[in-house]
Amino acid sequence: AQSVTQPDIHITVSEGASLELRCNYSYGATPYLFWYVQSPGQGLQLLLKYFSGDTLVQGIKGFEAEFKRSQSSFNLRKPSVHWSDAAEYFCAVALSSGSARQLTFGSGTQLTVLP
Amino acid sequence: GAGVSQTPSNKVTEKGKYVELRCDPISGHTALYWYRQSLGQGPEFLIYFQGTGAADDSGLPNDRFFAVRPEGSVSTLKIQRTERGDSAVYLCASSATNTEAFFGQGTRLTVV
Image 1 (cartoon, rainbow over the protein chains, first blue to last red):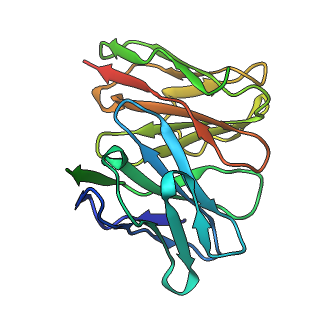
Image 2: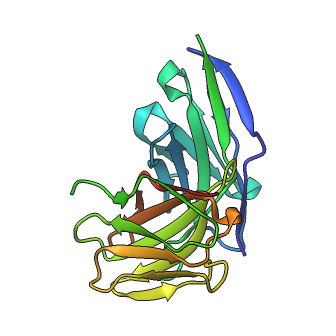
Image 3: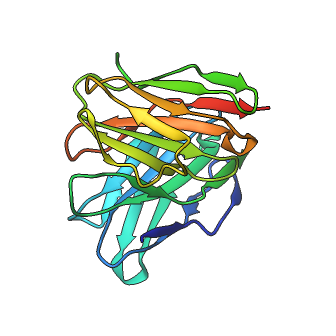
């Protein structure tokens, strides 16, 4: 079965600083890869996804992620963090074949942004 | 509606009671998913519907949990004989064929 590891439970950065959130997955083939953000009291919002093609994907709110097959990683980055980015971030994978799209999520990384 | 709607947003119930959680997916989305998110964890898959049928219910933890989607739109997650360990946020998501899932805001279930 596939699994997702987000090694950082909590990250604190200053506003304007760069950000990288780590995600590693375990799966025999290349899965579909996703990053979601969850703000307090809000549902999960999709930031970006990777299905195939260019390994650097751009998402909403200025986020990007890079798929590295050799490292089984899909790290999320943002060059300059805004206070409104404070939230919990989840990396997720889905099977690359079949019609089902059930997601396997990591345990999340809580982002705190200091003024 | 514009997004996935879940009702109620909060539910407090006593141990042993029966509860129903409702999900209204995005109009036209054929796929519907239920997930459960415990405190400090990522969401965990429960069940997936394609149309009216449950295509995969492998994530349901036991036979106290059941879900239906009789007309291929609204879905209800039913939990019998609730236990304190069932306390969590229950998330619903929907998607069109082979596209990403859109999530609702969830129902926070507290079993006391």
